[in-house]
Image (cartoon, rainbow, N blue to C red):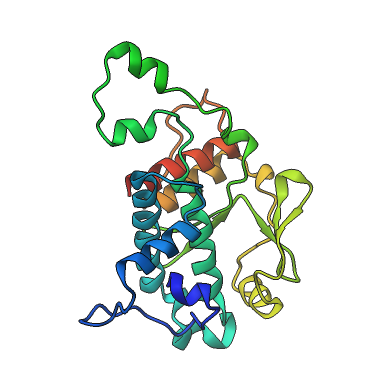
Length: 239
């Protein structure tokens, strides 16, 4: 998928089939692609591992989704799989980037005493969640629906950050035809996430996690859209 993406090859009708000879690239060429797209300058092995494993899981979900089957939805939502794969690569970059200085060291199981752990395992001020952009597209646990959160897509296909006055993040990421097809299928890509009430946010979390029913476990807790995205992101790390 990364190679086809790098060469702008068609993705809508492509499905990976593992068989002898299906991977023609040499290991060094594969590594070069990982380094090119992981989003981390001079990454550690664990950061590359995060990027590859998260992207791999998301691509499997993409291939299993009926919405990414061009033969089924191509007449209405042609181009959705290409958009999703590109979005999965963007999301995987976010998941590969550590926000904790000591996270990589811990995952590599370096031996540190308690004082050293406390000193090194602190928030990296260069990457604060609240100061970063987190557009997420989740394949819900039911395998038949998708949740979009943290971004908007304008009618001409531009990805926008709704938290910063709809600043354009990427132009022409989606065709107007696909945008119309999604809209006709009740997918609102111009939704104001900040207007979600607590019940809506809990339902969205439940859909992503695959809960049969959702309820408010603590009526005193103030749930925000930022917390919703964090909870979904943590769940995806576990997944």
